[in-house]
Image 1 (cartoon, rainbow, N blue to C red):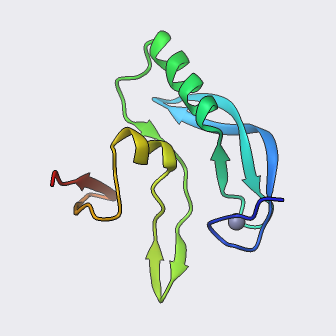
Image 2 (cartoon, protein in one colour; image 1 turned 60 degrees about the horizontal axis):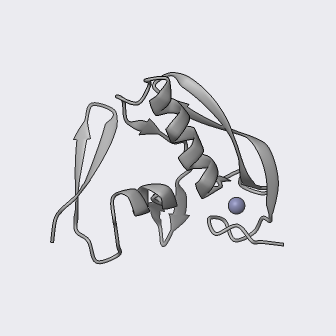
Length: 113
Ligand SMILES: [Zn+2]
């Protein structure tokens, strides 16, 4: 049984009803969900398939919207970058980011080295 990387308490259970919202369209994908904190981990291939379908029906102009929970660590809130975004944007732990607050949104921009 795989342990959840977010809460480190729950186990990951296979599910087929992870909702990814792209431009107001909801795509259902397969993946794993933590039975403790409910964090969802869509399979990489499923995410790619969803992106492919979204592009095909022309709903890709808007940014991909993913729902994630914040977790608490050392008195602060931690935001985990989804793996597929990490790969798409080629992020790594040495990268500097700029955080901008726009209204009630937070924009995270990786800075080129
Ligand atoms: Zn969890």
